[in-house]
Length: 219
Ligand code: C5P
Image (cartoon, rainbow, N blue to C red; front, side, top):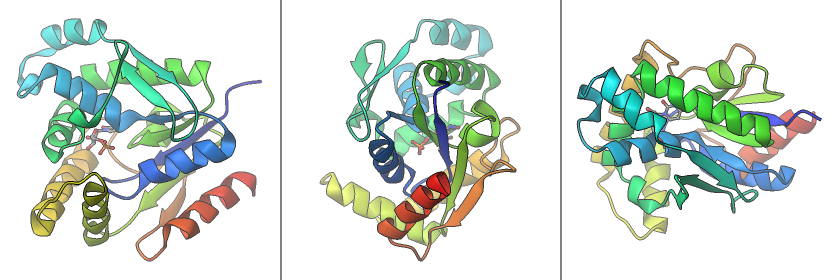
């Protein structure tokens, strides 16, 4: 049978990763964190990569290979055989990721890598353009949303869980700036696919969001 693809898109800090892991566990398939792909490429290329020009970027990208193993929250995404880890989880690397994510050469390269993984594995694919661009024929598409305040609160809690602290106002401002860039870029902007189920999670707990997703898939 064809691989089952479920897409989960939405803005930063909305809880996509948490839900993608749980949903993938429920379905006994891997989850694909495509934000981690952009972050890992940004981390590898370093600060200012977006100013280096397409020719150089194309060569750098051609040498990178992603692989995926495991199921649910145990899914491991690797770049050139090395698992992508906490080194990419800062807001600074996220902003670098957003900066390279506007470049068509970068998007084309990662889209190809994502689609290759989607041919080999059933996936819960989370990101910004999974339902709209990368997997237009996905079986189920979801778009999670929440207010910027609520997303900053969730991100703060997530950071606390990793033993990190951050200033709330600064975090909200960083998230808002990154969303603005992601929503307004010319190519594959952050927006729901026409056939996506949109879930406003602002006033929902994790169990309620998860239940809505499961209903959407089984329904
Ligand atoms: O999801 P995460 O916050 O880790 O993504 C980091 C950045 O990568 C996003 O702000 C966005 O610019 C970019 N991205 C993207 N398309 C995706 C996933 C992430 O452009 N499918």
